[in-house]
Length: 258
Image (tube, rainbow, N blue to C red; front, side, top):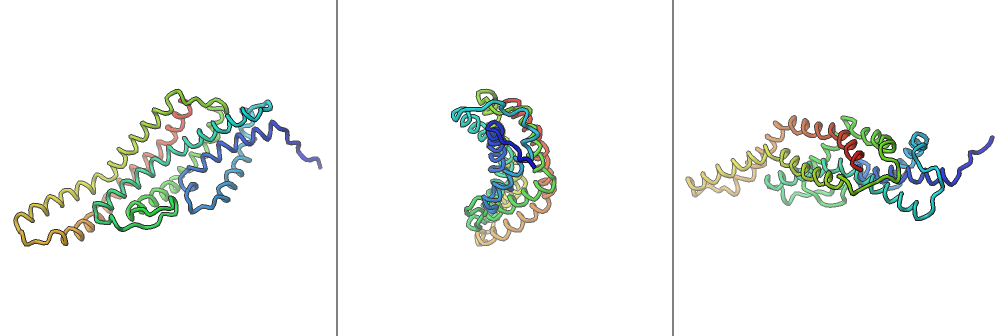
């Protein structure tokens, strides 16, 4: 039995392929969390690179590269992978930011828990919405889009063809603005109710000065917030599903701009 011969070109091509895939897995939702050991993430990236390399081998460099050219191509592949993962991370950042605003307005400003994903203390409602967004992300198989996008990216943007001078950076800025608008859409129903409750309690204070508004507002805000969250849960799911469905179009747009 003859062992396969691994040439320098094959090894360099595999490393280039691995650099792009590993960068995507480093920032992709779910896999980029601190609850997943780095060894497992590296193992998954290497395994997927081994499966992807034979498919994309024809678009990888066919000549041996020197150290400088290899380093430049690998750095460009890492930047490309980070951009792809950042597009999806914006959706989760918007959901968690909306949860932080809701929790602060409800009176849960001091109710923080440890988030294993970011290794930091985060607001309770922010953690709830972040976990729910991850579960929804997995239930609609949106993570499959990343696997498809990685393979398709090699055909649309071969290694060494990255160009950041086009419209990629303005697109990132546009998507960041869209994420802020998304967070406002997610938080709008509850904020509207809480503002009305605050105005109502303010009028009641003027009418009944002896009313202890401070003690009344805490259970009222918390109770109404949870009720509105339950009533608007379908809207929350529909908005996130729409954002996840748009990831495919955003990936293709990013590839064309790069």
